[in-house]
Amino acid sequence: MIDYLLNKGRSYIFTTAAPPAIACALAKSLDLIRTGDALRADLFANIARLRDGLAGLPWRLLPSATAIQPLIVGENDAAVALAAALWERGLWVPAIRPPTVPPRSARLRVSVSAAHTQADIDRLVAALKELA
Image (cartoon, rainbow, N blue to C red; front, side, top):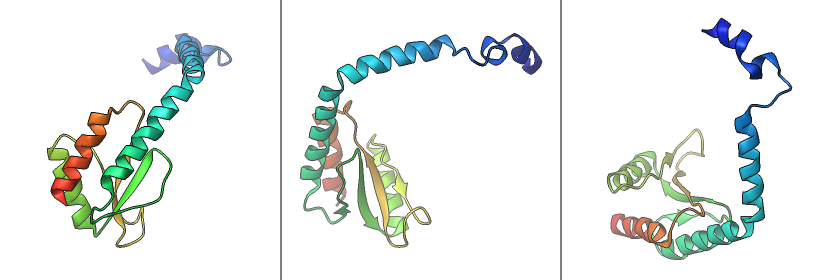
């Protein structure tokens, strides 16, 4: 099968030719760039909603204007337990632990996107408040 693909697959034979899927992805990317301001505005609104909602919790939210919002939990076991409790509620927020981060700074990696709704953000905030 590998030999067949190497000798018959156009993207392997003609390495200067991009696969048609790349052309389609590029066309879609150009559409997204044209409408990107609205998506960026939605993303920043979601980040602000999350940050406002998490104020006052026992965990420290690091300063971040990006889609990644690190919530410092502290000890590894506590971060893993919190991530597991969120998972049980249908929320995927992974725990990040040493050696990826410094000792005693285990955290949740909250990833916000423009595709999240206000209800999605509110659901996460409510779950974290319940678990606090």
